[in-house]
Amino acid sequence: MTTQAEGQPVREHGSGQPVRERGSGQPERERGSGRYEPSLTVDELAARAGVTVRTIRFYSTRGLLPPPSIGPRRVGRYGAAHLSRLALIEELQHHGLTLAAIERYMEQLPADMTAHDLAIHRALVASWIPEGATEMSREQLARRAGGALSDADVDRLAAMSVLERTEDPDTFRIDPGLLHLGLRLLDVPISHDAILAARDVMLEHSRQAARELTRLFQAEVWGPYRERESDPEAVEAMRSLSADMQPMVVQALVTAFQRSLKDELRRRYVDGPDAEYT
Image (cartoon, rainbow, N blue to C red; front, side):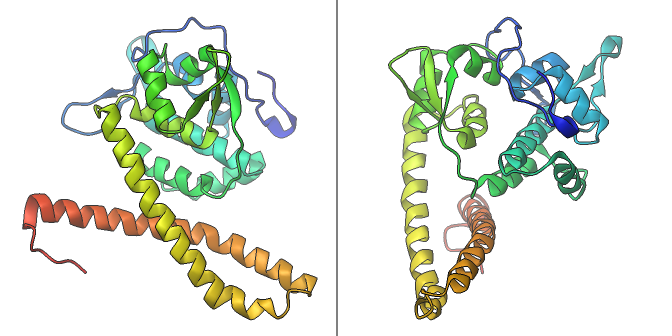
């Protein structure tokens, strides 16, 4: 991979490394902790993130990635947090941020953010970035996954709308915004049917929330502007307001869902079905 001005990396797929069986380059979970121990070499991290080793080292020198853990023979080992940071950097690049702007953005993040925290943060950043499908070969997809994907894995990714098959069996149309999440879900012990059911639930309720919020926006915010639709400045102000509100709405939805899920788990497993929360 080459670099652009200011060191901006040019993404590329296929580093020439042999494809491994999926799971050989996965961060290992420490028993009972829910955390992943750093277990990826720099080459494995590069393949999983879809960048080159040179890019990872460049990011490290700029402070965008924390130092690796040093293992036997003084070999650096990387974990899920490094992979999540690389995914967040990718989203910020898609958003049009320069390397200097990304550095300033990353400096504001807490140093102790976990891979889970970074994944949520990335979802918020990606929520309003318009992305089209991109084509990816089976080999490129395998490198992003950390090893070869079975037909069942591809079926699960298709069920989650992460990818669509094409006429070429070795080429897929990929949703870049869902790829990182979909690959992580491949290692979650949930059945194919359960994934489809969960997807239907989330789509149903998220669409309902979107409809109600849009109705509220039109009634309370857009209404006063309708009389000035012929004024270009008023229209531009409305567009700017909408763009500013969208990330706040997403963050509010994520926060509300997290609290609701926490309350539901407490009600089901701790306090009993009659418990009430505010």
